[in-house]
Length: 303
Image (cartoon, rainbow, N blue to C red; front, side, top):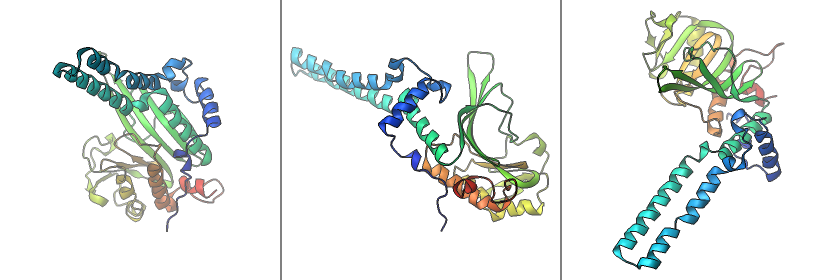
């Protein structure tokens, strides 16, 4: 039976008060991302303050109306509408709470401790050179969010591009991605269920049937090791665990697992799926300098 190799306990473990207080001070000082460097306490506590005011203020108007007007039809209607409106505002505020400072900081703390427990380098936001896969465009405003990196060529992150057309509106593109470094270079290959937005180098290539109902565009589809890599590992099935729109692209010695939206990296389930994909690819992954075990999460857990 395959065992869980990554320690995902920090993603669900509640932080102790001393640890949270220390992390909060570091975050306010800008040590855990510029987006958390907020010195004004009322902005950091905006969600808690708003929720408290709504909960406390919700019964004020209904009680005042009923006291002054009595239990009339109009009074009851006004009280009911006010209460329903306040409940709706509280629900909407709670639904969007992840955008406020406190929940974002707690998520950042869990991701930071997860990275530390598994010897991963974690960056809340990173720049760096453009990646080789086709989803990485040439937009001037692009960022890699919640980027995790392990030695010997394993990277997982969320990617975002912002396009400004010069008008008042702008567009964006978001996707999660994983990069595995392979032992050797392979022909440029894309495995997908979608026929559009193929890389330029593959636009004149005829597709062939691939595993799990996909189509494969490759400069050398008959390449023996390529067929073994796609079929024996079941990597396409692992990719589709993140959604049917997920794609696998191979460029040189890098295999990209591309998802159709952001990866929920605070979820242990996502990391278990990545762990399973790394284990399936292990025979094809690059070895550390001097030999040893392959790259990726498999190495991290077997250190």
